[in-house]
Image (cartoon, rainbow, N blue to C red; front, side):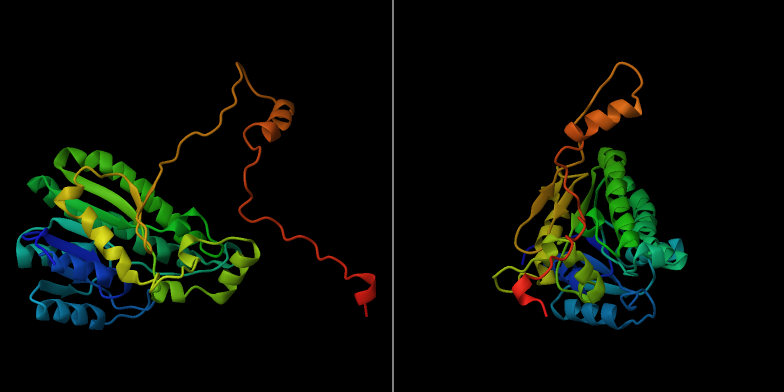
Length: 317
């Protein structure tokens, strides 16, 4: 398609399938040389296979691109070190990091095990740290880098995904801190909220979907649009790849929505209402003021279902 990334080297974690696969193909089409990382496991993170990474590397090479596979896990520091070593040994440097890898262990928090909590955070949040920790010194040395961390709109709250939401919003805070630390070295760091029909979205339990629907909770990713393939995961790729180019050098510390047709900029958190008193508040004062000030009109994300209405008298058995 072009040569915007000619001479650049990219590592994509979780690049063998779904959204990551599309990102890899777009990066390669713009001239980037790739380390395609994919553990090849199941959606819950168990198992392993070289198939997904090998298949994509073969496809990229057949199209004239440059790519090597890697099968390590982002959940360990050693695995991330191996990915960076693969880039340095093969291409001599690393310019771009896209941390896409992710797993799901969905469960209501009162049934969740510590292992289910830890496993999700280790891939998403620890994985982001492991990868950045190992690429940052090289990017700092060359005074250039593009880092894109794949967060999720689910971080804003989904029933049955407390572990996933914690990891994904943790990534956003991580990105905002990194952007300040790395900006002096011409390194941009952004988070994206991607979306599409992938193994992960198809793996969300029907019970979780039903609970959200009953409570009026929907996400933009769950809304269907009357257009051709609105949920095609490859719709994310050009928007993500733009953030990896020199043209996006003025964008850092941001959260960008890449799902579906639009590309969205999320506003950072800011104070929306304030009440003030010269002195300590009392509970009596707060009980009086809060309903008419700070909390007036705020939405309930999961309102209680209305009680069932009795059938009209003529309809009763």
